[in-house]
Image (cartoon, rainbow over all chains, first blue to last red; front, side):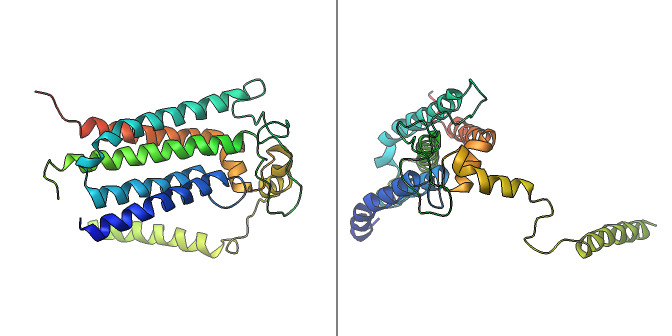
Length: 149
Length: 88
């Protein structure tokens, strides 16, 4: 693509990634969550793909796949944390540690350090969606051929 | 004969749908709101999550999310398998 598109992409990609991270981080407080934030962050990969072409993103394919695998493994491990009660039991909710504070009852804006395993699962699913969608888009882009359009 | 069969099937299906639509509850009003009230009342206590939707998706209905993650994983594997560059 032209130099205008590439320059705008360089400016916009950090902003898109930051917004995706915000949607994932506040998934247990505001609308959104892991899937939505991951999809937002994956749109940065789509923008890079459009602006710079698939061959320049070839080295991004393996890290994205590894990111998806790590997200999936982390999600299942977090689900197994509460196996003492049931699968997917929220063990960390109200335990006092990381994300362990009790949420105030009633309508409120919410506090970041609440939710137990929910925010951690948000991050796991977010990385999983970012890696999965990004890897699929890079693979589709690489399939078209070797010409750099 | 074929025409009359199609017409009868159409009348039966359309009549059932219209009958069901006429007896439908008002839009957005759940007939059984027991689970709604439970989630609204307890998600902040049990899951410590202010966002009830996320509490349902990642806590109460975690199996659903696991299935969705599996679907995404399968889709990525399928794309990688179909679009791989064969070594020759």
